[in-house]
Structure formats: C-alpha cells, structure tokens
Image (cartoon, rainbow, N blue to C red; front, side, top):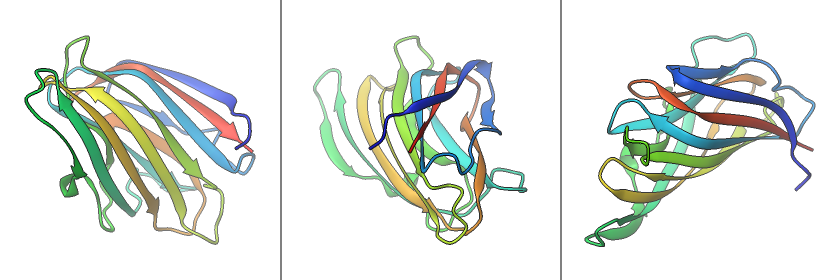
Amino acid sequence: MGIPTLISTHTASDSSSVDITSGIDSTYDEYMFVFTDINAATSATDFSFQVNAAGASGFNETVTSTYFRAYQTEADSSAGLGYNGDEDQAQGTAFQHLSIQMGAESDECAAGILHLFNPSNTTYVTHWYARFNNYGQDNTSRDVFTAGYFNLTAAIDEISFKMISGNFDGVIQMYGIL
C-alpha cells in the first residue's frame, strides 16, 4: 500500500449529507475515506454512502454488497458475530449502510474507513470495502464490515454520505493512494 495523500477534509455540522463532487479522478489507484466522530441527530438511524458515475446524477448506481458485524452490549447481556442480510444489497440502488442503529447522544458516534478501488477504470466494476465501529443507541458496540462493488463500467467521480434519516455531524477526510 502506498502512502496516503490528503486530498480534502469535509466537516459536517447538522448536515443532511456530505457530497464530494471533485477530486476523484485517475490521479490515484485507490481512494480512502476516513470518518471521525460521525454523530447522528436522529436516534436509531444508519450512516450510508452511494456514488455517481461521471456525468450522472442522483447517487443511485447499482451495488452488490455484503454486511456482517460483531457486537457486544455494554451490560454484557449479549454478544455475537454474524451476517446481517438486511443491510446488504443484491443489485440495489439504495444508499449502502456503513454503520447501523446509531444514537443521537454525544457518546453514540461512529468512526471508520472506506476504501474505493480504481474508480476511474471504465473496463471493470469498481470494488470497495469498509470497516466501522459505533456505539449505538441501544448501548451496544458494533464492529461492522461491509464490502462490494458498483456494477458499472463507467468512471465514478462523485460520492455522497448521509444518514438514512436526519442530519449528522462529523469529519470526513479523503485520501488518494498510488
């Protein structure tokens, strides 16, 4: 893995979304997004993302993904590891969940990293994977793993992050990796 180069920093403050519409191009083979203190304004919501192909709009590209997580309750009453089919997509166009059941209290936030591979390629699909941790509205710590691909052979040049419902605060940094 090459050395990450910071391209941009985006600070959400009671924002409905953070749309990154520049900086994703053929300069880098991989783009890494680092999320710090992502905090929902609405309890029991999910943090998500979607992309646009070059020249497209609507953030509704076709995605196939998988989603699994480990969890542990604060009271040590429940723990586990497993696949969560409600959070993945099979040729769907919805925003992909990265962190679920987030709370709105100051200690109920998320942090994570998303990797997007070769988004300027027009021959193959664009692969991605993410890992997040959040402390949720139900006093549960979740370590979330998601991965998939955007099923299109067009360059991807825009990405959007949002809560499924409500606004959010947090910092999103975009890095390029050669």
